[in-house]
Image 1: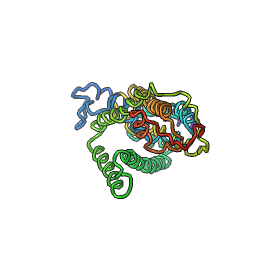
Image 2: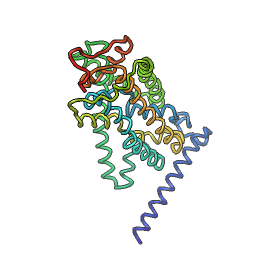
Image 3: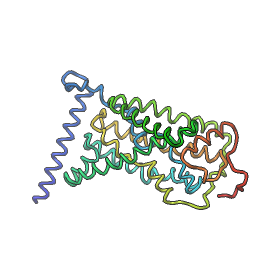
Image 4: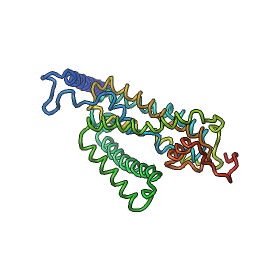
Length: 317
């Protein structure tokens, strides 16, 4: 009985907190003098739907960059199947959990609040520490990946001091951008997202008449399943990161689910369509699909040249 009373008290407290959060959100959305908190500027500084979609997109993917090892490790067939199926068994369930818990507890603590509410302060602290370490390691990979792509057009950036300088410049620029505030970051993410996806949309359009569907059925001779699944997981993970912005979102109960649905769709198609275009239009061995290969594939598609090596027969798959 005591436990039931305790659980009932927790439920009532949670309901009261959610009601209070909804009331504050409504006051902010109203834009009136009574709803505006000092220094808050009313609802003008809250994240709206479009910037939130692109912030989630960059938390997870930022474009199909880094998807090439899926082809390299298993071949076009498994890469396409992986990016078609994996969103349904991982990305969508994680996004649904994030939407439910973020709207129930719309605070900037996100997953730390979830763990604290469910298991207590110490597990909540562990969750925050683990996610911080994971985010630091994961975030360090993106400037290096950008340098890999930049080296395709500026070979000097491929190694040594110029590569280090490029990576440091990426980090400094993005760190400065974060200091400008979430609103500026959100709309900057919209511009960067359009710039990031536009080349792949253009490549996919040019590739359409050159696609040969038989090439989608190729598989690698020596498969590296560890690399394959790590690539899928890395490219379609971190949907829960948006929970740490839930307190900055306009009407989170409505905006967060919509943004997550849009971001999951945009991210999944952002991987699948360029992969279909490049693997269908360019005839190369899976081993050539290293990081940055999309740039080579786009050049081959544009110039109508193939990158295949003459000494390799077609049955390298």
